[in-house]
Amino acid sequence: MGYYALHFLFTNIYHKDWAKEYLPTPKVAQTLPLVLSKDEVSDVLGAIPNFKHRAIIMLIYSTGARVSESVKIKKPYTPHTFRHCFATHHLEQGTNLLVIQRLMGHSDLRNTLKYLHVQQLNTKNVVNPLDTLDGLEGLCKNK
Image 1 (cartoon, rainbow, N blue to C red):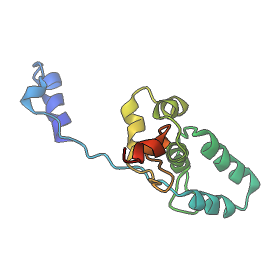
Image 2: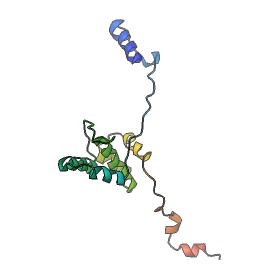
Image 3: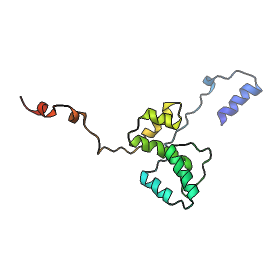
Image 4: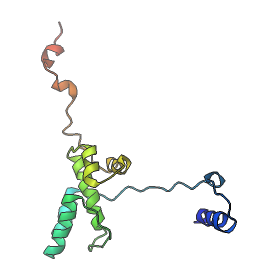
């Protein structure tokens, strides 16, 4: 806030040019979005008694649509939380990050990259590329 006050003082009162070198802006810490597990999403949807409200939240979750207002839904989640869940669950299912970027309407990939930090990594289904090579048994035999 003080930065902008000084900027206003120099440019509007003193009519001087303002250069960022005078006083660089502080870095703003970026927080990771709240992402619910699929079970938590299901629980929240099941807890919404009004069909119309539940359908709206299901639409937001299933499309990743933006919501301009964050209306509380009797839990500490907002409709925008379901947008984050949409992207994160797509990522966890293996959807390409560039596809998610397009689905979310992000012009900058950095906005989509934040979902890499909140996804649950499932290492149970990871296949070692060596195991997929043709003729692997022959390669493992001592000649």
